[in-house]
Image (cartoon, rainbow, N blue to C red; front, side):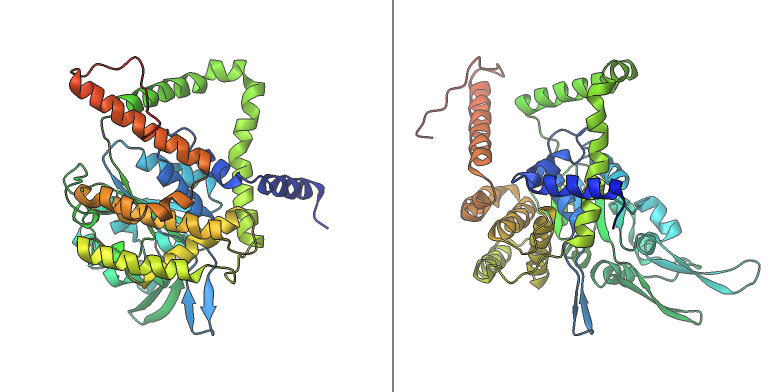
Length: 413
């Protein structure tokens, strides 16, 4: 029988899971000091819970970990997200693109200066086995670094490909023949080639990464620093309020009030560990026809738009995300709402990677899938928010930047 503290923790976790909106609560609790970026927080939540790895007849292993790439303008909190994950994950290894060339993302074979024997050193992906590997400035690794052709480092780009998909690293050098395990989720952040994200060109042309590497990321998030008076004012208020609440004197005066907030991260960490250890959702009740139809439509749109090719890996990504969402709710079976959530994240990733010229038409084409993942209240608030922003922009255009005192939305809109 587990000790009393463990029983209390499990009881608290089970009570939290009974809440129908536990998924939304978890997503909102991700990096609470960062305003907005709901798509990124959703992706991080799914990556932290992960899907279920599968071993097909003991011959072929399918990964359950979810890989995620954030690409966007400088100063959009990408590094802060990675630092938050490092704090909340039960096992995390943080590295940067500049440092990865010295230590190695995968593994290296070096000659010991004393014994003169060849030794094997694991890189960040190996050290993060059964955890999360966080890579900042992923784009800062140039071709020489990614191929890792230094005299004492014998790993080429294909090792990164193998580590991200097969989650293993094969070594055959200097008499050392072995395979290292790298069963970890990869969450990386990168900056655009020209310093700022250019919406006039696709995602793949904004980042200095090859298509084989991009195809191994389940979720692609674009972070754009756009000028929006309403959002900018809300962000400024949020930042000022956050600084006020973080002041030592303020914390001392309201210590009793802040205590539950300080325990939130610890509860989330234990909730994730419990879910990964005890919950393994099954796919028997999965809507296969919906996934097959969406896959065919995405293939057609990707060929027409000339964007990142849609492959079978994207089907596997949807399955992993559906399992992660079911695991987030401590469910033993993948339900329709889990599939809808996975499809929504996949479509947001796919549409966000397109040129701005075709993004609106794609959202209209796939609106039947995007709307199903949101409940009616969230969908209504989202729609009203978009309409209000459009009216404000139109008003400012006509009145030389002035802000309206009131915004009226006709019912027919």
